Length: 183
Image 1: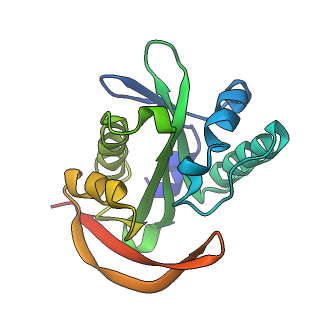
Image 2: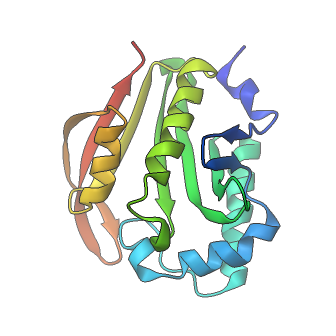
């Protein structure tokens, strides 16, 4: 089975505390509340959301990316309440090279509680075990130390820095690159 065939039915994944599922229209108000916080968007490639309509358009882009088979983005939700907490993504799938990139963001009130690491472990397990990938990559702005700690907790190995690689919010940033190989 090819990697892209897994994009035919969106996988719902569960961890001890989380449900990882497709982002729904009902998530948009909470998504907007979390994504409008400038502390959340400091290290990601988009500005704080200014309206529910902007968030709805973003959710539509996520759905379209999945339908094209270019990315899988899960809503990270509390397992008991189904409350939206953030996103985890599997993007830039290179089927020929058996590789892909992961990314994430989470609402500020959920920081430093292990949710992102928990979700990412599940996503990486899915990529290795179900999609059959060999290499997973991730990157973070070097100033964003908490994101780097997540990558280290996932067992990812530091591979180097791309200087002035990202342009975010009017400034260039160096990106620290990490990778994990499926042994």
